[in-house]
Length: 231
Image (cartoon, rainbow, N blue to C red; front, side):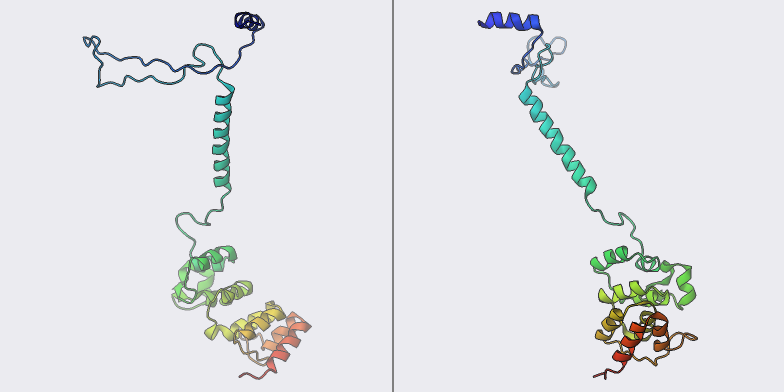
């Protein structure tokens, strides 16, 4: 079938095939009186493909390229929207406040940032409840966790590298009451002496008394570790 007849039949049937784009001519911009001399102080460009201006459909290949570009852009935006972002964006929550609120994940962010867990920090950051249990204007993170009876937070800080120091006795009492035998064994391995007869918070009895309020297994663990001679 000749090309002329094919075009006629397609026109009658309303079929319009994609055609290659044609580059449009640039329109010269001229100021009044400039004649035919090109004017350089104004843009004279009006470039680009004129497909679509005269009613011709845009080629399928061009549409596919545009679609792929849009898809890649949307995919990139989706990845960015799902990207894990820091818990804080401008003003981080103070470390002592995160400990007082039991926000272990946030404390972990501080640990990963290289925060010194043994440096005293402003007690005011922890809120009024902490001020009622601790004296002075500062407190170490582990000291605050033990004072607020946050056993899991205290062990988290120890595992993160916080020095136990003078908090050994109080931490053992708290663990005997709220922890597990494995927790006591962990503290013992970290150098915490396990003495069943050691006194705990006033009116709370001894370590053995608190262990009895926990479980029989805790009592057995405390007694066994207490019988181990210290080097």
